[in-house]
Amino acid sequence: MSYKFDRSAFKAQTFAQEQKTKTFAQDSVIERLKVSFYLNSVAYCFDINQSPRIDKTMFSMRKHKI
Image 1 (tube, rainbow, N blue to C red):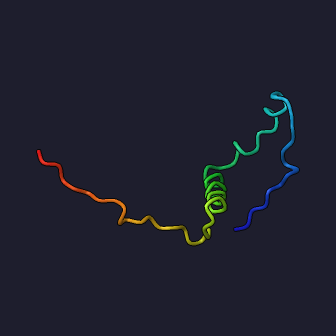
Image 2: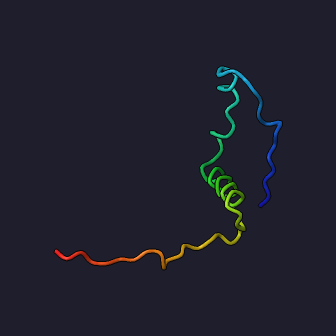
Image 3: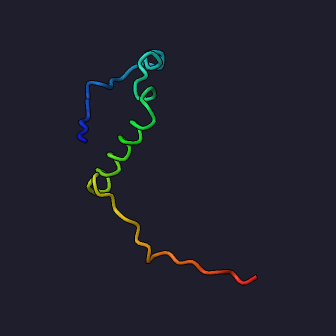
């Protein structure tokens, strides 16, 4: 999957003009999640095909005495 930021897709406009050109909100939920996952991979520098794993040694569970 390859995404490219399209700078021509956005421009300064009034609220009335913006109501006419809603694009991202009309995309499917799955597509928005894919894009947000890609942006997270760029922000946190991990490969999109191999997401990082949680370090399970940092967490522990214990029973509370009742």
